[in-house]
Figure 1: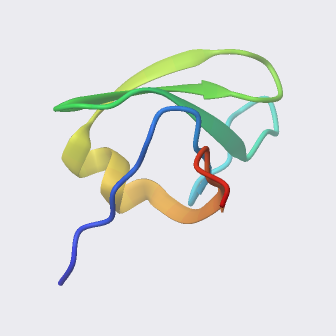
Figure 2: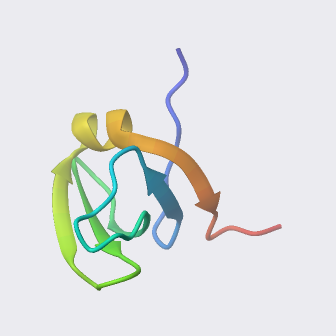
Figure 3: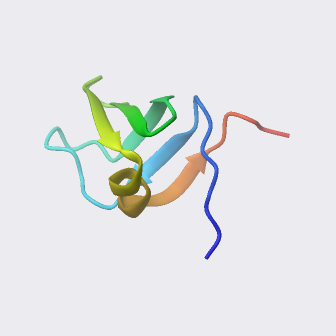
Length: 66
């Protein structure tokens, strides 16, 4: 199974909705931990890489648009 590569500025959709009702998150930090920010309310959350990769539903917008 191939691993996906995420970059700073990518916008992802998570499997579970945030309590504010938002579903889109921007990636602010990449490494062993991911820092993501809810695009609806601005809340920032740190997640371990394994939990983040399991929780991502889809890549909505890539920061590296060709």
